[in-house]
Image (tube, rainbow, N blue to C red; front, side):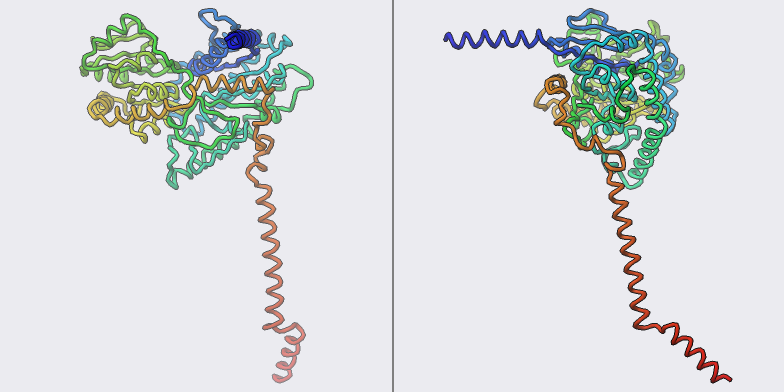
Length: 528
């Protein structure tokens, strides 16, 4: 018994020491989109709660102080991108290539704004030491310089799931035959024409990325990241220790990943439902015919919808017997029916867990898609830009959602979609099955993410889990040089064989030039 007691005391002391001697971790989540911050901050808060010392660079400092947490705010990002965020609703009409180019340009602007913030520049020259840098990877490659400045390994977090940018950094394969470009509304089951389209868009993205976009990120890295002996930009960006993906195969579709690319989608979801505010709870509890939750996300504001679209939505809701919670950013909504409750903020996670919520009308963002699957609520999607079209294509194919095209959005189209979802039980049954699949995981996503951040810190960058493909160029990775040599060898062998065959056939069946001359002379004499 004494030995057991001694062991318990020692274990307690060891755990206290572990917490006391937590790692120093730098978080870099500079995107102005609040949804991206929600993913990153959930991980950083989880690390802080485990006793690690957190320094966080982002436009969203904590509203309430937290132990072990220091903010380095970047307010200039929100100020200088407000007009861009307010214009998001107009991005829906863009073509795929135009959307890609705009995204790359936005990334360059955002990276520049982040690195030129006075607070960030002062911090870069602080000579502090960190055990690991956890940063969002979202068209901001120059920010990888934080790892070089603080001599710390980098754990990337892709709030956008897997894509070309993160695949390049860790050398993860993405066959275009069944991995769709995230800017195209395709699934992993593509027809020949769809595969051709997927290849075309992906090649265009590759060319623009390699020859236009990355050289500009390199310029920002060399200009804004301090230090005379910085590593080469192109080598540095291939030295990521780990990438955590905001995705899960049960929500999207299976993909091949290298060891240091791990899915942790849904780590922002509350596993313990919090009590709802009294007015919202009363509104939902008394919804005897069920309730609908309507939100276009944290970036797209419903108050900016054109008047005709807003009126079509209001008329649709007025004709329902269900109650509706609508995330609307103004205090007043002219024409609001009595069965609609508006607010500029709703606790979305907790609302979706309420048993009376039967439908979620959404823009189809990745976070909302994961939350609705976790809570088992079918969706109607009105995708506007980015991966929202892809997410809704997956929802329709999986059988738990319906897409309503924004251009065709009317009282009829929205009303028909709502009636179909609420009257046909197959959508609710299917998403409940999806929820069961998603929840069937060996570890919670947040626990998995924390484990891998600590793993990289413990093993000083964990070089042993990096794929050799990280060190290869595009040509080497795809064996284009080897295939070129093989094709050249085949061509030379072909020419050699053809030359030999001509010679053999000439000897066996042809006449020599001397014989041909003799025949010509003989024939000439006969004529004379």
